Length: 87
Length: 541
Image: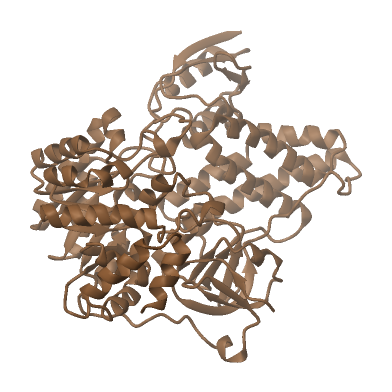
């Protein structure tokens, strides 16, 4: 199991549109990825609605996790996405 | 059939058959269950994919921000967890359509609990559920009907997203809920559609019933006599002279606008200018902040459209009911009493400075003056800070809105530091009566004829005379012709309204002298209730 923790740079947090952008990328990662915030269970990172229910705000830390071949590369790419302002 | 009574919020009369805003398909645990759960799960997937495809197609036809919202809603329909959740319900023997509803409601509950922006997405998500349920049931998708002939559109309430699809067939709006400052009311006035809100009885009328809607009196008459059936929309002819009382006292009748398109449409009317340019329409639903250059272009377009006519620009009025995605204000227990209007400038000073810089640049580019005012000002000190900042940007005509009772009570002090004030009667009413503007059942307290509200307007009018500062009104009260005469009697010198309301106000003011207006104002203020005030003034004209 690989994990990464990253601070969300999107100025509006993971609102609907940034969540859609992120989950599209997660769905195309090739491995199942989960996303979690402190105090809540991890959810499927490819599910926009699940990501929205985390209520992630700007500057909040999230933890991504994935297992299997290509997991590290996939997580690095997603971390990079979350570290940029998705608008 | 008995005439229904609602609250008239946008003037005009229209007669057409009633249609309903696509009543959503209601699913139930008692619906028949499909024979093969696996097959039913496939059908759920197909239905959600069809919903997404339909929303994406609509996005193609829509403009920028609306297209964005529709695209994002389409993405919700394709969510794998939604499909999986519905599939689990199906596997447990829940009827197929109801399984989708349960899965949707599961997410709605969680989003609702987050409050604010996320809670507002519940409407979008439920819309996905309604569409999927309709697809599964093989009935038409809910939505705004476009039958190809004039119709009166009835709905429980209209969400801003519904309004994107309002076509030319809709000649009037009637809603069960909503108050005088609801989205429905504001949309209807901006489009010049007669509208009645808070009309509970409309729910009992059969679709196709011919109804006569009077957007002034609030009456909705089913099966009107034959002579009404041919009546098209009846609006008073536009008066092309400046607003004035019978004795020639000028009262500028200005327009409320929110976009460059509104500006062009209003500029083509005889209006004396703009009394309220709601700049938040440039910001709402924007994921990123429009930069100074973009704002400058927009403001300059609006200023040019009006030549040398007065244009009053209100700085960003974000907050409670108007969240701006790039201003993370967070959740508040009482957003109407929280960080909103000018108060947001404390946390995001750059946003205000950008806006003031853009306004100054736009005025220079258009080669004319611009008036700028701040919303939600409570004290003279706040007014002074705003005025100093605006003047530092080279803006010479600076005012504030009077929406907070404290600002009305201390209007004299406020007017020492600004050039003009504009009374926002909607918010001043809500704060004076401690009644939420969005609560339909509190409509009576929010009635702009409330004597307490008129007392505050009178205080501001007196302060204006004392300090020699112009006092305007840019709330919905300005659009009520009879109340407009009362406001003039209270010392108000300009009235700003949706352009469609101007003709009726113009005609009414032309019938009264300033002394008449002062008498009407005394009558209204001597009343005990809003209804008594209106009746008393009506009876004496």
